[in-house]
Image (cartoon, rainbow, N blue to C red):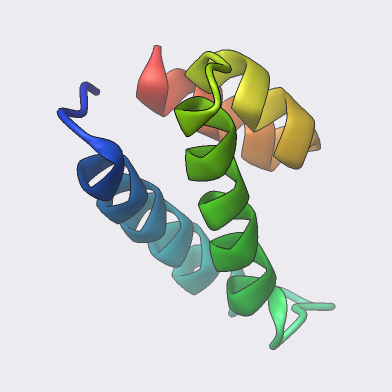
Length: 76
């Protein structure tokens, strides 16, 4: 997945994270605040990329586990 500017990156992250949240919303132990947390972390990823970090570094800095692995797949 490629992006042209920070708005495009932010849009793609928001879309991917919203789909992830929808998928996980039916699972036991779902956190109803998760999407808000994910979207704030998406903002931080965009900020990190704007400051010179690679998308891979930014994902590693702001997400972990399965969510980070999924984002790496989408952006690499």
